[in-house]
Image (cartoon, rainbow, N blue to C red; front, side, top):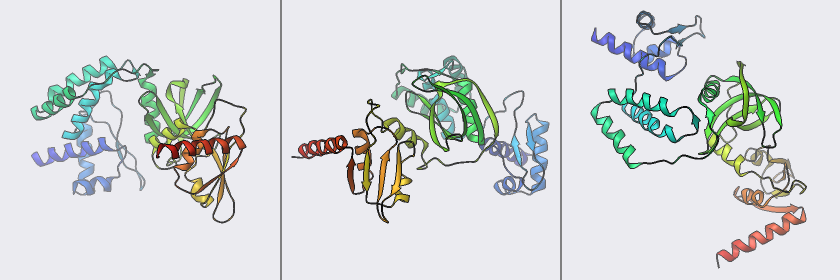
Length: 321
């Protein structure tokens, strides 16, 4: 009986770790047969856990939504991470979550072993946070977006840009990123055929969930780095300034993977060189970012960009004298 109970807890823990498992995957993880998995799933259902099953070769098991939350099974590191996260939530940027976090923390600390309570208390006593005076977003909206990223479900929403222009967007979401001040959705914009980052507080109205989309990987593989690069940007306050052009001594297909299309267009210039043209007006930050590619560069035009680059190089050289 003890062995069966321990296996049921292990099965429940696996179902909470991932959205969907095949029967064979669960059997391999628990070192039992497929028939045992089916019996254990039936036992979990009899205890009130909504375990859903899809038949066929591509089918599997997943923990569905029920009337009540089942007990979460957390290891030591996960329990500490959740407790510390709840303690710091009151200073975050999600509206209405402070009181809820306190209630959840009280329930969690009540069942934490003494050794973990000491670790959580030590971490809490040694750290502090201050509230950032920025926009606050709805927790339900953030949860909906995060769920769409997890399940690769398309999102349709109304987005208001910084110039107050509103557009309808159809996206395949990838990840949610917090910059320390704002929350961002990283997604592939199907209408623009390119990657975008959207400030969640600028998403207005109802968010519609669509059909399953493609599971995509953001350029560079790191959503946080992608958002950071977009925040730095290549734009300038002078909207009338011309685009900038820089020749790079590297193949176009290599540089194209490192320069997002939102910021620049990469075109071949012979077999071993390419030209990068800013998607908008040039700025000094564009030159500085291109220099970090660690490839030989030649600033082509406009003349103002050439002059600004020379002045920047002079200042950097003087800083080392």
